[in-house]
Image (tube, rainbow, N blue to C red):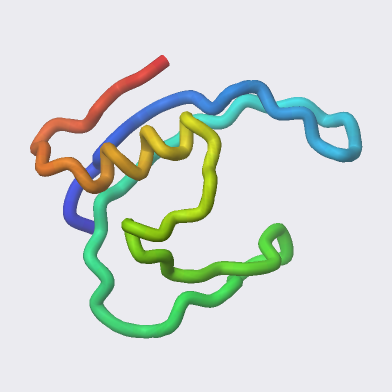
Length: 80
């Protein structure tokens, strides 16, 4: 890990089973050193590396996290 890039709170989420949640999001700027991306739990079905210029469409709050991680800043961004 290089630095904490952002601290934010997710929008309200309603899951398929009806459970609702709001999540504290900690975004870290990191540098890949070695290894392959892989799913490590039963909550995810896919993981992959994306070139910055070819990112898929993501929700605006997720794009803010990506931008914070890519910014050349020392201090973390805090958003409520």
